[in-house]
Image (tube, rainbow, N blue to C red; front, side):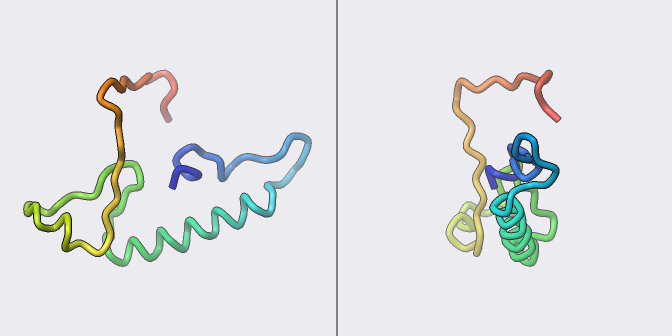
Length: 82
């Protein structure tokens, strides 16, 4: 997930026209994992924490949980976002 969130799937080695074999393999693996997660959560977004659907017991009942950890002293620099 970190690989995708930081746009590392788009990087090319210096002086090369194509991405490396590992980069392509990691992107394919991400797509496979994402496809399986979307079978469970159709509107899955890797940039946010999955919800609990109104019941705290779902923390333990859901088949997949995705957490976005943000430090308490975090401030976002909007000039560097997409």
